[in-house]
Every structure is written in C-alpha cells, then in structure tokens.
Length: 267
Image (cartoon, rainbow, N blue to C red; front, top):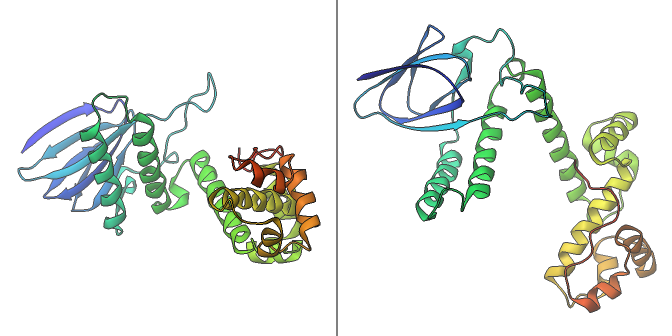
C-alpha cells in the first residue's frame, strides 16, 4: 500500500466500492469497508493508505459563500469527531446509478465545460442524499436548517399534488401537513411568500399549464371538471388571475403558456 499525507484543501467524499481502505483523519485512525463513505472537510489533516485492489469513488468540491464576504459554514457541527463523519450506504443501486451517469457524461464530453451543469446537478442529488443519511445533530446548524426547509417544501408539494383534482380547505391542508394553522401559514409565507391556499392554487395552475402543453386538444370544460373547479367560468377567472390570460386563449395559441405573474413558489 501507499501513504498519502496532506492537509485537505477542498471537501472530499470518499466512497469505497471494493477492497480495503484506511486513513488517519486529524490523527483518528479509520477503516472503510465496501460501501462505507467518509466526508473529509477542508482544513483537516488527512493521511490515507491505499491497498492493492482498492476501488473507490472520490468527489472533490467546495462550499461557496452564501453571500459576499461571508465564510461558508462547515458541513459538520463544532465538536464532531472524525469517526462521526463516516457512514454506511445501504441504497447502493441509487448511488451507482447516479455515479455511472456521471462517468458516462464525462466520457461523452469533448471538453471540461460541455456538461458542467449536468454534472453539477447530478452531484447535487448525490450530496443532498448523503446529507440526509447523517443524524441532524452532527450537521452544522446552517446545513441542517437547509435540509429541514427542503424536506418541508417537499412535504407540502406532496400534499398539494394529492389534491390537484379537488379544492381542499385550510383545515384539510393543515391536517395532512401535520401542522397548525399558524405553523403552516408561517411556513408558506417563508417558502412561497403566499398564504397556504394561495400557494396551493398557484401550484395547481402551474400543473394545469403543464397538462395543457402536453394535451393541446383539451377543452376548458374538461379542465374545469378534471381539476375540481365549480364550473368553467370559475376556472377561467382563477386561471386569468394567476397567468394574466384566459385558458381558452392559451389553448388557441398552442404555445408555451405565460409564467404566472404571482411570485415564485420557492426562493
């Protein structure tokens, strides 16, 4: 085997595929078994020992500042020990699928920037999935807060999606989100800058727009019945409030609809 001793400049995710791997992380001796994963933070002293037959995936990345002049947070909370930065991945198929996509795109790319945004998006999915596997109490409070916000947003979208063919009242939305009126109102204002029912209707109209793009021959009356409006007049009025155009005009155009003029659902 070969020792490589260095002070970490960037963050690194080490995922052992097969074989044997061991390292010293800030003086703490660690060993990874197949499908164990370790996040090494920038600034940590890292000495890894590579054995013959060892196969692993490594991702190097930086955390960018949230705003100019503000240092980015670390991933882990202060006081977290090196051994707590290690975890085991149970869902191998999920990570292998994404990693193989990255490798495939790299082989197809003729230059380093051609697929940059795609690579970045795939890595973002991998990174967020990994962070969700760590106990929240060992993550930096900023990272943990961002994860909570994404999870709450996904939960609300899930509830909204289940009721696209209905007009749920506020009590029903609160019950399914598992929140009080005040808590749901506060969260929707924070995430969408709208009260809950307004956010639901905004989301609903966006989904109707997507449906209209895929089904240009659909009629206004059919849309009204399909998505739970009282009648076509009610549907047309609400649609115009959100988009600035009547659905009948949009269907005649057979083009991508206007963006709703309400503020975006997520910041």
